[in-house]
Image (cartoon, one colour):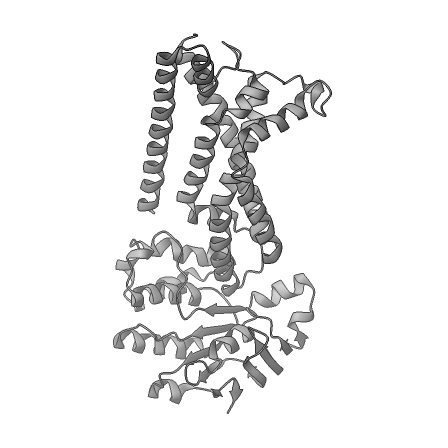
Length: 213
Length: 215
């Protein structure tokens, strides 16, 4: 799957640009790093790439189609190939298990076996029956990441996935992302540059003040 | 005076039904508004907020005008029946129920939609999930509507007529007993009204909080 951004700019308030004239391509499976300081536009870029945000200007071309100028049906089909995981996890009221089932309920495309594997890898069995409001920041992040990664997609855009995780979970997540990137495009935004992450990256996109450096 | 139990039961079913009707309408209205453009929704929500304080006598008059022999709903023959009170009290309770629900639905729908979009869904199927997120507010919305409906006098008097054994409810009974100088009975009915409102509010609040805690 190929995603190309052409002259993409975005402003939230009509005055300042979070992204300005960005052009890049995500060409097939691999690990794509989006790095930059706070406020450089990483989240905006990931939301635009994953079709969660319509850019103020420019085009997002997915497999040759101008995504935001397609029919409703075509857009829904394109959108179903992307998953975006928020920096601050969105968990609904209920247990971690309920939140994990939300992935399937909302997307209808969950890989149950992969979800079970992720639960084992992250030793998250003990979290399953905990209420979302009782989870720590790191546990909530894990629950949200497992939910996102178990949804079948072609492109995974993960916003600051390492935030709030302890070192052992960072290592586990790195291993999972490396494995996943063999068959899928995995975009990871981060301001922590782990050596293992840099070594595995197919492409590193550096953002400064909304522009690719 | 007819039996206090009869008046109480009549009040309960009339106001219970009226607040249920207004609750369902408020739910539908809140979801529609939450999906509408924010500027439009804010104007409608502001209008609803202004309606919360409309005197119930005005709504009673409106209900009367709808149902009286030359009104648009005259063929239904509902004036001075319990159904006239149900219609009027539904109108009384609707703004307050909707105001409580709207902001909660909007906030929750925004979060759930954001989550659904992030997982690749573009539309639809979110009603049940949003409703589950706002269970305590659903209870509160019904409760405030019920409290407003059971405690109002204007509609019950103007559109219901306070007919003994037929449309006499707790508030009209208080008004009637006071007007004939029967203060002891009026006070008894008043105490029943306060007790019922407090008990039902407490019971539903407790139920809502239990559901909230268990999820």
